Length: 180
Image 1 (cartoon, rainbow, N blue to C red):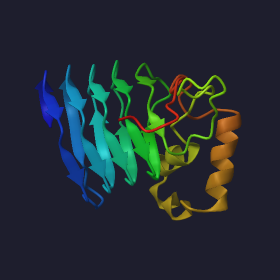
Image 2 (image 1 turned 90 degrees about the vertical axis):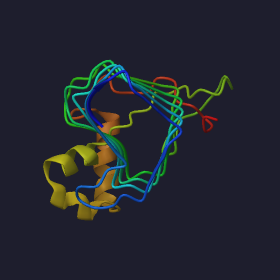
Image 3 (image 1 turned 90 degrees about the horizontal axis):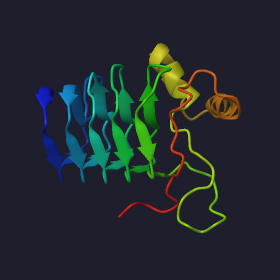
């Protein structure tokens, strides 16, 4: 989907699009749109976003994709709410240190936080961009290290002291259970 305004994509399924140039959905220069209630399952990239602004992503399921969402610059004021990110190799990939997109109340299968007040929202913010996804974007050959201890170590170091991933790209109220 390219060069469009005010479109709605509701209730679609994007499944098993594998390959170096395969996407569940490619968005380029899309503005003021709604992407609601879709399923992106087992794609190389669930959604590839470039130059797209003010889009509402809500109640979507991202299941076992290589990259659930890959953001490639000039994407501003987008809202990601109540989406389920389930068992993707990378939930969010970002190629910039700047972020003014909102991630709020999404379910992340990798989230290891807790909910002491039992309100259904995690008490610890979740950072969906991993350092290893940043490295793979810069040097694609490093993908061979995907399931290695090395990957776990560098992702943990970025979690403790974020340097390369966008400072403000976090879900401050991650869901503890999948969104309906």
